[in-house]
Amino acid sequence: MKLIDLSQPLFDGCPNCPAHPPVAIDYEAHSDGGLDSWQMEYFRFASHSGSHVDAPRHKIAGGPTLSQLPLETFAGPAVLADLRALAPQSEISGALLRSVLPPQIGGCIVLLATGWGERRAKDELWLHQSPRLNLDGARWLVEAGAKAVGIDHFSIGGAQEPQNARTHEVLLGAGLWILEELRFPDEVFALSWPQTLLALPLNVAEASGAPCRPVLLME
Image (cartoon, rainbow, N blue to C red; front, side, top):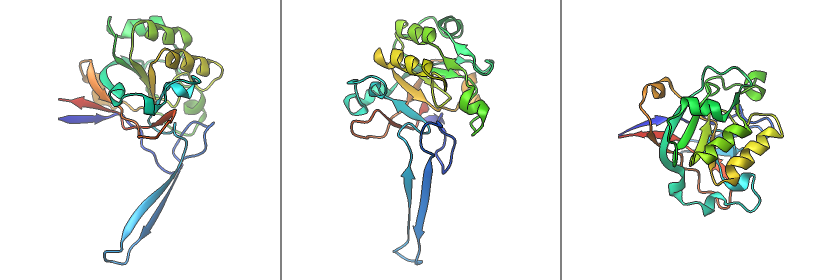
């Protein structure tokens, strides 16, 4: 078995959504050279930081939380849309997705590889000019029967409102879950698809989302 890691690392001060509090990780250690030596870390960040899952409750009032979704929800066959040629602020439409994805994506987790995972930085380009899934693209994924959709940026609908909120509402309102802040290593673009994806979120009671460790499971 081989695992291909699609996650972004969480570290103190790492890039994140500017609408959220900065990521803070404090390290505390004690050593006496014996049995009373230890280290621990204190985490302070929003639940939608780093690689994370959005449950419907994130945008849909009364929608399911993570606690209400079976763990199997967050695993399944995945297909990759290679969108690395897109320019900044490009919109990902249904027609574009249809041109780069297999004819049948029902029950699949659709991964949108825009290249922005490799650009991750606290600058204007990454924070505010990423390619984004527009409403037409979101509706196409729903109609095609996708199980979920992931992207290599902190927000699937881009940084601009109200489009970002409406894209989330279309997807989450239809029962899809969203996987954000991915990173696609070069080796994934040589794979045949579908592949099995696991993106198991932390077991946070009644949460709208939580960090996860997304990996491709290679048998």
